[in-house]
Structure formats: structure tokens, C-alpha cells
Image (cartoon, rainbow, N blue to C red; front, side, top):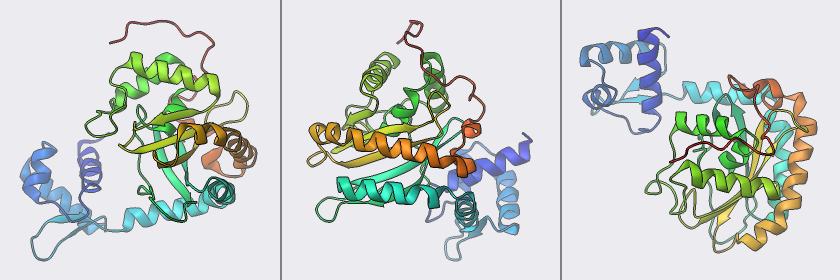
Length: 280
């Protein structure tokens, strides 16, 4: 990757966390870029419509161009058209939030949702979010389909979630994470409590045909006071059925085909007994 392209992408990714804009000195300092070079890159991004400069403070913020491109891509891929009826039915049956995340290389990104809760507490994260693999139900549901070595590699690249930024039960070691993954495999779907966020429980199942690569994950999430472990266990068969239905129909969308697994897609199935390795 060229230096100019790498710096441009770094700025775009950085600004996604600052919808109200960020100052030049802040951007250049946190990205370790020379202020003059960062300024030139920002104005190139302005020229091509990806960044705008706010009139009063002079801070820099993203335009809607990337969001528009992403929505257009999802619309043309057909994934939402295929998945929405499935997750709508599941949301109606469970009366909880149901989401679909797509596997893209080493990333797991939320692309569709259906809100089943009609009253009370609602849990509704932003769409387009890349999930933390180590402490989200979706991430763990995907990781449980991988070999232990590959699961550890993915989490190492992304970083393990700190309980200070997630839920108090977020695993802080690979040993703890692998134990959770093993428990998920035994039941066929993941269940987490106060792990991704305090006061929130969730469950998830991978979307895959037989032993093929996982292409997506369906998640049910809700407040822990309502979405109890007992209810999640009861929802298990419905969630598995929804994932099976989506796996069968998903070949109509390029995002739900097994070819979409990315760089590491050749090693997907978790062996019955993975090699024991030194864990911290």
C-alpha cells in the first residue's frame, strides 16, 4: 500500500469516530502524521468529496459519500432483500432486536436489523459497526467455527476487548475465550451475558452450509433483565432454523456466498480436538 493511500485511509477511518469533526492538530497527532502532510491529504479528500471542512471551527468531518456508497453496495448485493424477511420473522417471534452481520475477511460487520421489542428497554446499536470478535455474541459464534489457532490469530490482529470498554464479563485472556467457544460449540450457538455491554445479553449462530465457510451471523440481543439465559435457550431452535434458512437462500447474494470469507477462508471448520497451545 502506498504511503499516500495509507494516510488517506487512516484519516477516513479515524474520522468515522468524530461525526462532529476533528481539528487538524488532533488528527495529525493521533495518527502520527506530519501536520503539513495531513493538511494536504485532508484537502485532497475534500476535493474528491469524502471530507468536508466545518465553517465555524475549521474542523474536518466526513461527508455522506462513503455511507452512500456503502448503502448502494448493500442494496445492489441483494443481501438485505434476502435477509430482511428472515430476521423480521425472528424479531417478531422473540420480541427482541435481531441483527445480521456479514463476514468480510477478518471483519464482522452489521448490515441489517429488525427490532421486535414493542416497549420497555430497547437495545439498538448503529449499523455498519465492525464487531469486537472476542466479546460479542456474533464474533464468538463465528470464531467457534474456526480452528483454535485461526481464532486466536483473528483476535490477536483485532485486539481482545477490554472489560472497561465492553461488558464486565468480557474475556481477558485467550484461555478464557477458548473455553467460551468450546461451550458454544456444544450447544450450537453462542450465549453471552454482560460481555459486550453492561446489562445486555445476546446470542448468535453462524450462517453456513454444512461444513462450508461461515458467511454471516444472526444475532438476538436485548437487556439482560428481559433476555435471560432461560429465554435464550428457548430461542435456540428458532435461531438455528433462521440461520439454516438464510444459508440456503443466501447464495443469491455475493455477500453470503462462501467465497466471501477473505484472506483466511481456507481454514474454517473447528476440529473436534484442537491442538493445545500456550495461552496467557
